[in-house]
Amino acid sequence: MSSSPILSTIAVLGGTGKEGKGLAFRWAKAGYRVLIGSRNPEKAKAAAMEILDLLGGKVFVEGATNTRAAELAEIVVLTVPYSAHRETIESVRETLQGKILVDVTVPLAPPKVTRVQMPPAGSAAQEAYALLGPNVQVTSAFQNISYDLLMHPEPIECDVLVTGTSKEARLKTLKLVLAAGLIGWDAGPLENSAVVEGLTSVLIYINRESGSRNAGIKITGILAGSEHHIAL
Amino acid sequence: MSSSPILSTIAVLGGTGKEGKGLAFRWAKAGYRVLIGSRNPEKAKAAAMEILDLLGGKVFVEGATNTRAAELAEIVVLTVPYSAHRETIESVRETLQGKILVDVTVPLAPPKVTRVQMPPAGSAAQEAYALLGPNVQVTSAFQNISYDLLMHPEPIECDVLVTGTSKEARLKTLKLVLAAGLIGWDAGPLENSAVVEGLTSVLIYINRESGSRNAGIKITGILAGSEHHIAL
Image (cartoon, rainbow over all chains, first blue to last red; front, side):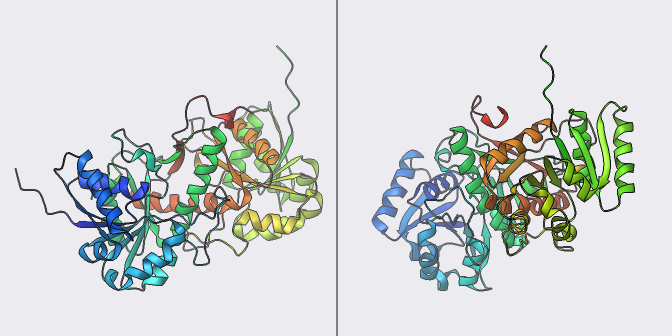
């Protein structure tokens, strides 16, 4: 019927890790142009090749340095471990101005990963916003997804709570959630990211107690027909 | 076959409010001795009568002052609005020594109830623990339940995340969750209460956005047979 809309270019910084590679895989599959970023561009290219192979080559995915990937994308997704959070943000601060950063980071403090511990800014996402300044819209999402599941075709039984500095940025992020095959909810202002990030520690605790690996959460109690969250 | 075990006496401080009355109703129905506490003992007695009427009189529920109710109970549940949190705790501090306090309080800061805002202690429950000292075990629970639903017989589609200062106290609290007809999960140390309390603001936000009233959460992804949380 009508031609496909031109989809945005998404950079996935730290995209050689499990989380980033899984999200890159799903977005490439959905037709987005995906740039995998890493400090080591060779690793980024290897991760891109892996995804190309898995998807039979009919998608757009390339590897680059974090900086180059951020330069070429409209939406930048940050999937580095918390220990590299500040450094990575500072390395792309200039090129992010005017764009949207989707922060996937959970500020886990090993070895106590089952205990909620937020940084002084309130959450990793608020820390990112403080570092980037008001010309970057920051959202947070995907922190509760068990990343083992992203490279598999089975449905993932975990909703994605999206917080962010503006409704517009949250809606754009919810579109990416949907493209990844997940159910997303607008969970309000960026301050609410503390809850979503902290929920990861609670889910790790529940996994350990129950001998499971894939504890997640679902939002319940919303009347059918009122799920505006997926009507983008 | 075997005779019923003797169930504990539960005091519900602030039990004339929707939350407290709903929980008192469910525990009385389950066979617990329930004491409804209030600053105003006449109001407490009226709430107890209302529950007795609803349940046909065949249960134990009485009204008293908060202090008297706390004195007579083994487990004390706090369901006052956040504005009365500190004052109520201070009024029962002595009598709570050696007991368990289950804090249901959400530190909402009206009018911004959809924005997560935690007190300096980290959460209302941690604030309670700081006020009470190490001889009181503090747990937190029930913050995400839509209290409109507690007085109705329909199943409630929202799990209860229980945090607390010891495993023992969390297990005792999980027993009360089960007795109230709800599914509970041990969600770890009291520090994790910030997530559960804050989740209430996220659920209020989702309710407002979707025109619903009963948004809740369910834990997913746990293998069947590993739900030790209900094997109490």
